[in-house]
Amino acid sequence: MNNLNKATNISLEEAARFLLSKDDILILSHANPDGDTFGCSYGLCGALQKAGKNVKIACADPLPANFFHLREAIKEQDFEEKTVVSVDIADKSLLGKLENEYGDKVDLAIDHHLSHAPFANLRYVDDKAAACCEIVYDLIKLLGVGLDKATAQCIYTGIATDTGCFKFGNTTGLTHIKAGELMEYGFDCAALNYRLFDMKSRSRIRLEQFVLEHLDFFAEGKGAVVALQKQLLEGVDSEDINGISALPRMIEGVEVGIVLKEKEDGWKASMRSFKTDVQKICKKFGGGGHLNAAGCSFKDMAAEDIIGKIKAAVCEELGYTAK
Image 1 (cartoon, rainbow, N blue to C red):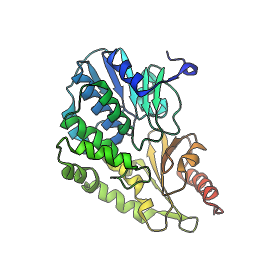
Image 2: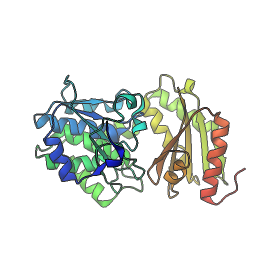
Image 3: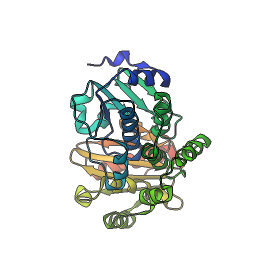
Image 4: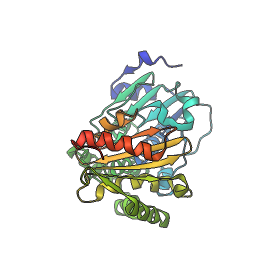
């Protein structure tokens, strides 16, 4: 079992040497997965397999259909893991139903969240990276195996999705440079961007209609919140659900958008902003994330009570009186 008081920060070069010295590796993605955590896990898995390692991936939730292209980078392998690595996971609770089995067994954590809470024996965290895939891209270079088209497509997927197709404030010049380098490997970037950002299922469109019809505006229109009951989310692809989180912030005048999603064990709030530190707001409720994209969870509370607490916290941050 890991001793959390002895979690050690290491360099990326040390992380590469660690991985090259190990075998039978399991890579963990976070629950309610997005393109970054899956891009990291599939990209790193493919690279380590090229290095001759036995590597497999585990996630509490299945791979969404619009990420099926990531499977091209890996070979399915079956073995008993000896080394456990997490990617894009800020807290072991984000492992979801895998936390009981692996929460205290992570050997190396690779992450980019400002709110990272140490849980692994070793960790490499760069909170300046726009996406964890930016880190994994550099890590793969250090492994000495080289990238191929399928692996490059994985890393591009993570970078593009975590920057909102390079529109979010976390995007840097280095982000564009790395994306440009990845495009040189020859995957169909236009088709991939369409699948990731423009193509929408009918269930996604119906969900967007509900959100727009039921948004509750507050703080003189600078805040917008909506709650999605679990029956609304049944049968909807997880990535479609994740994508809804950005919708309220797209409305003119909205600075902080919040989408509440009902889960089996409570409610999850996803916050998005332009300039407001929503990571700071979510931290008040035991959550975290990034400056402009963060989340938190609530248990044993009604949606109306949660919305009241969130409104008060957002209004305090924006300098308004909650009503």
